[in-house]
Image (tube, rainbow, N blue to C red; front, top):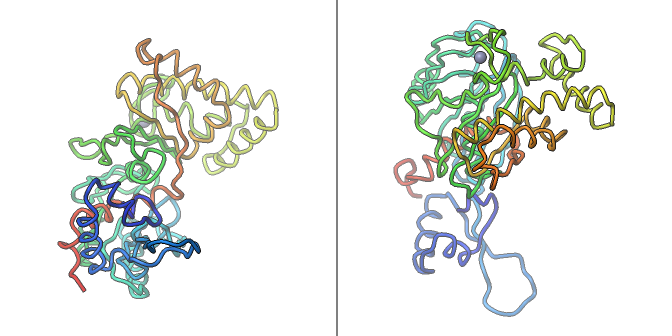
Amino acid sequence: MVHESGGSLTRVELAELLDVTRTTAAALVSDLSALNLILEHDADPTGRRGRPTTNISPHPEGPVVLAAEVANDRITVAEVAIGGQLKNRKDVKLESGDPAEAVDQLDQVLHERRANLASNCAGIGVAMHGLVDDDSGLVVQAPNLGWENVPLGRRLRQSHRLPVKVDNDATLGALVEAKRGAGRLARTMLYLRSTVGIGGGLVFDGTPAPSRRGWHGEFGHLPFGDTRHRCRCGAHGCWENAINQLALAAAAGIEADPVEANAAADDVLNRAKAGDAEANNAVARICGILGRGLGSLINALDPEVIVLSGHVQRLYETDPATTVDALMSASMRAHRQSLPPVRSGVVEHPALAGAAEAILTDLIDSPTRLLAPN
Ligand SMILES: [Zn+2]
């Protein structure tokens, strides 16, 4: 509860949230304090009379998780403790296109970080833009990096002798938005995140929906686009090619290079917000395709809330009316009576935060297994 609330709670609030007696809450606080997970301290003086209250916060010297995200041209690393705040986030240029050399570099970056940590390192979480076998941490395919069957999880476990979690960036983003973000307290959350492609996940009660290999959530490769077009994934008609940054630029008559796609899309969105008619038409066309896909996903998955992150979030925020119209027209009549709310993601750097969350979830589930008492 202290972690998910992101800040601090009083003992009374904790007992209420957990639905336990104050005596039980006091015993829990004592156990978790002995593990350096939380710290009980006097509340800010209010000047009022009465019994002093104490606040419970994440322990400042508690365990730390190292989180990394490997993108096209860089590795981003940060430290995350209980409470979920990202600290010392830093980008390092990826020095080699060769997977083995890139893995060596990531391993070295993580060792350097660990050497400078003041606290215990509880584990390492890595977000990859690609398909990952979520049990072993095998990177099956990361198309933009050119990686295939890279045993990243095994390598980092052997090198660091710590719990390691490697997973898809959008799956991890879904996890953290469900736990501490825009999907908190919803039982089923559909999450869509677009950076280069579009991924996502369905989270049920704070856990990503199970699938055979953890490859679910590739919503960008559903055929909501033009079926004459072949996608880099091998399928035809993929949704992401119809709504990504390049598609938005093309709708506005701009032939952008893939490396300029983000800038070109930003330009169209900014012009649309400023009232440019041509840019608004382009945004409306793409939002129509976004909304139709969302309506279809509502029919298939019946989520309680939809959370958008990245490019799809910016599209929706620029023209919510067209998106919702298209969503309505694609959803079954029964759903139209009470459509799930569409929200913007609130967690900063969701892939990094999610990579840490995967380790923190295990730590919080069984702290005594992973940490020895003081
Ligand atoms: Zn595809």
